[in-house]
Length: 326
Image (cartoon, rainbow, N blue to C red; front, side, top):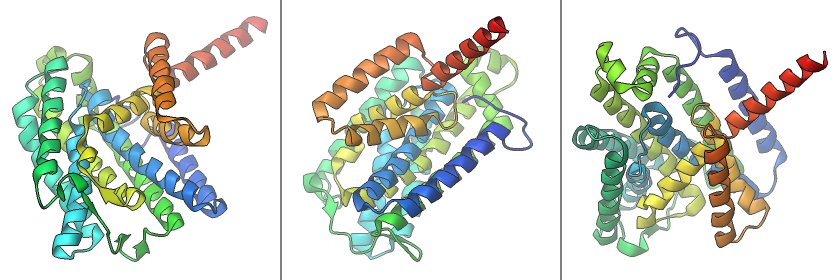
């Protein structure tokens, strides 16, 4: 995670982008009438939050967290279980899912974050498999059929069964997460993460407790992933063990890589491309896999920084050409 701007506040560029996002949300919310498009846009916001949680690890400390889907799954199952088993409201389930995810991240991080690179990724992948098998066999999770038939999905007075309300609520939460992560990037913790990502040995020599910073990054990312899992329920209307599949994490990783891991809103851009573009172009599932596989190969080979790097390169070439013509 790259530390941007002054520690005392948000970088101007990030503020401008977030403000633009707020205006865009207002425009879509007021202009769209299609329930399908509004629902898809709301789901895209939730998926973008998940991609942001993945990027805390990927862009922050340079680790590939294949097990991030475990926290996403907890965030999905917690509201579903507390609503059906205990009769509690949806928002209580969201808070429980985020809290459980944070505590579980402490345990998982303490056991796994001494590993790095492929070793950490493989272990986290294994944990996602264990979580998925557990969800398949527990009665409280509904087994293979999952949980469905939720009576009231609402956050306070805001009924998420309304596509427009669902979209606005999800988009506002996404903006809050972006503002929070922008503060994190410009903080001492953000600088420590950037130092750890660039060179853990150098960071250690400067007095940074590398293991502690890596653990804090995982604990930060877990409740955000759980929040994303909860916000997907009004769109899917069902929670099955597949929410803990590693494929879900891979989708979020691709979104982060496509948009650019160094840019705060990079995962959001990638999420929009990954979820909305296939729907608008009516891609078959196999065609979607082919297109995005080719796209990610192109980006990794030509611009590892994602579309953000391509944009910066294009701007640099334009300015250089303009100077030569002058």
